Image 1 (spheres, rainbow, N blue to C red):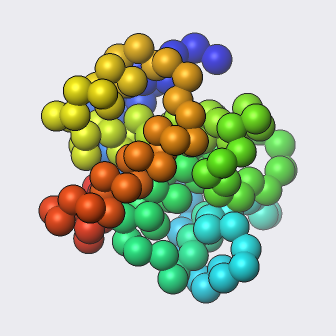
Image 2 (image 1 turned 90 degrees about the horizontal axis):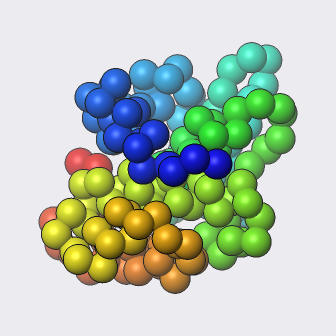
Length: 153
């Protein structure tokens, strides 16, 4: 796969936002919120030529944003075929999960972490982002009082 950050910048420029809720709406993806306790935190699937993302309604809004961004990554990067994708933070061994994690990281980082030198270097170099990088992003969001309501709000 080519570098992902230029693709994300083009996506943001085309749609005028990096907010995954707005992107899902513009891309005609139905986003549903349900209690998914015991299941993946989010799921992307297609049914009858319509795309759906289901997000666990029990998650904090900031994590819901990241899960939605991850599932959008599946939609935009892996939309061929009928596979169901579930949010998986720690499965970097699966290339499609890694790519969706990286998509979510870069989409969120565009807004949330512009001033963090470590994250800027990670974005600029597109080095191998580990599950630790995504966990660091989630921890930063959870601890940053201005981002608790949502990463993209």
